[in-house]
Image (cartoon, rainbow, N blue to C red; front, side, top):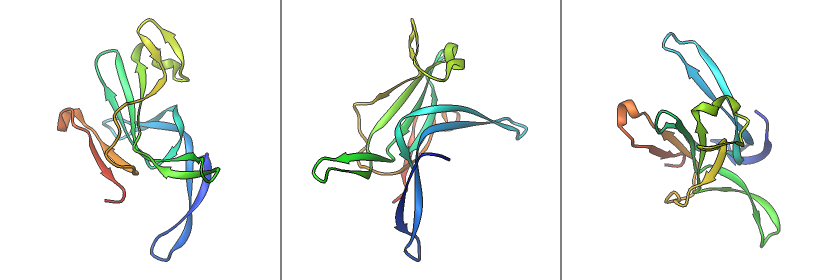
Length: 150
């Protein structure tokens, strides 16, 4: 899994368990016959975990990977220490299908910067860890977010 780890108290017995922040993400491609292969890795904009994510095909050439919320490492200037905090940030990774084989990112081209993450101006209504569900064949262009905490 990789990434940094921290301990969090939880569960029925109040036991400590480890949480891993990671900078990489993979996509699992499942065929109709049940076979699968892993695609990636895609570098995340920052180390994070427990974020919602969707894969969005905009048109014939442009697609995006979009993340919602999650837990990140932030610097607390008052305490002068790093802390783990839930986020309300939405990030999008632009992928030009013509350059998708260059998945390491940063490939400049005339149509935009393939592999470039950007932070959306819009924020989620509350900080949190989310699940994201998106299927244009079933629910049109709606994205459904569910908080881990209800």
